[in-house]
Image (cartoon, rainbow over all chains, first blue to last red):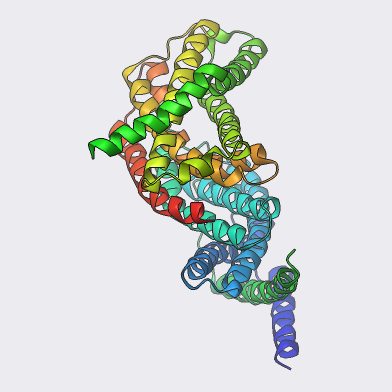
Length: 218
Length: 224
């Protein structure tokens, strides 16, 4: 009952946000149509960042309590979080080219997002390469925690790096500040809500799958 | 305290003695790095005029990749010959084993880096040796050895340990790689680094933080 209700609500939220992005929200004056990528990029960036924090928390809980469901949850969050990070990075790159004039820049947030994505890819690769069992789960939890500890240092390093190497932002709109209208804010918030609901739903499905696979020692 | 230091030197001495006989780690790091540096020198139309940023990138990229491959070899032998288990049976604090491995790897990396820098200066006709790189090398090596030791022991128990170790340590080492690259660039360009103090504090805090955290976690992974 709850599952069907959740499916209907999240499905409706996704359809509503798609309709708002393509039909309802006005086109931004400075950036044009490409600005609509924001409504995909921001929600997925939010979901991937939430996933990273949640993986670290679930891993810590697993190390403290030794309950397998925390480990399953951490794995599920990492798997869905990595997919969200791919969407975030890809949509960001596609947006940056027409707006900034370049695909990529050494901006602190970008560098941190990329490195965190690589750390969690390594976390998932480790889980696949290492023989299954309690040792693997505990070491994976330690890797997730080290990744979380490393993230503020990466951000700080990227910030100093940026100070030394000014950004090569050469696009025609690089210096123009743009603010969001109320319709844009509503669309963005609806997209964030839709992606969050979708994210929780997929994590839940993935968690159930990992639980079944775990009980079979895969 | 004095005995602990003696034990530390004995365990490191064992690794150094094995290395002196096999010459596997230093030769692997040096040759692999030289290969990378040579590829850049050969593919560059005028190696003498490459920008300082690129030069520092070449030096550290070659050190990081070759270092991670050599580290996996180092722990693979420990795992294969079950020597790590033998050391673990010794009635000494487990942290001492961790520190001894850091010390051995620190030494191997430093020797290799000296050789790489010498060859880089010949092939690219530039002098990377400066106060900046002399500061960067020990700080980088300390962080690299501690993270490498920790993940080296973890990955030695898995299949495809070389790939796994490289995948695990490089993203975590990124702040330290940035630190070393920036300081080397400052030395190569001759202009200096405007944020030298910030970089140095970042490098040292990275080392201290990871040594403390990994020393604490080392016992937990060894239990497995």
